[in-house]
Amino acid sequence: MNKSIYSLVLSDDIIAAIDRMAYEQNTSRSNMVDRILAEHISYVTPEMRIREISSYITRQMEDTFQMLTSARGSMLTFKSPLAFKYKPNIKYQLTLTQDRPELCGELTVSFRTQNAALLSHLERFFMIWSRAENGRLSRYLPGGTGAEYSDGRIIRPLYIPLNLPFYSGDDVGAAITDYINLLDTAIKHYFANWQQQDILLFQQLDRLICSWMSNKNTVII
Image (cartoon, rainbow, N blue to C red; front, side):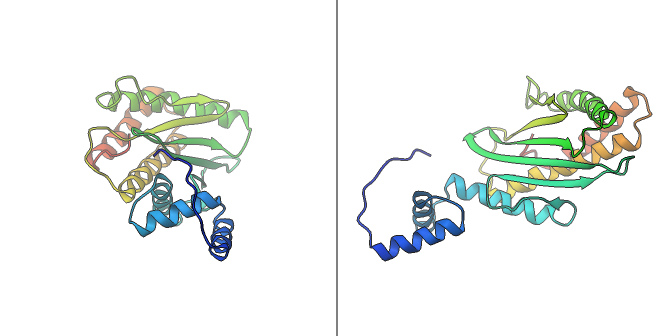
């Protein structure tokens, strides 16, 4: 949404109240005025949509994941315990965006450790998982998901198919939640069965993806 500079004559007391609200919500005066006017005319700004998605995800995740950040901004961070030696936590960092119509955000997965063995397992999981995912999602993403493994982290763009009809913030939030739960289940399955051969792990992870795709409307891929 484009923005322009406008001159307005407003009461000092009103500006003081707006500044207090902006401070409490960690935003600027301009964004606060923009938000108030948008709410008054029932217009959903990109920032409001991101807050709606973040709030939905937080409500759904807080019972199964430990939230590390609040739902106020465009970034959410949470962790999930992994039943493996050294008792690591899987860290998920979700960054939401409205810059491109087909891209709603980016998910980064990492361990809260620098243990070389764990990082090697995460890389192996990524290689098997991305092969299964790219195969199953090729009809939506012919060029692949664009996921990368770098510096001990999996970085996965989250897309919205452009041919979808209107979808609400809750729709997007539910789809992102479903995908994160899928990925968390897949990682834990891998670590419970890592001694198996790659081909067997691939088949098992592929079945998880098939089940995920068959039980939902694909809003996030």
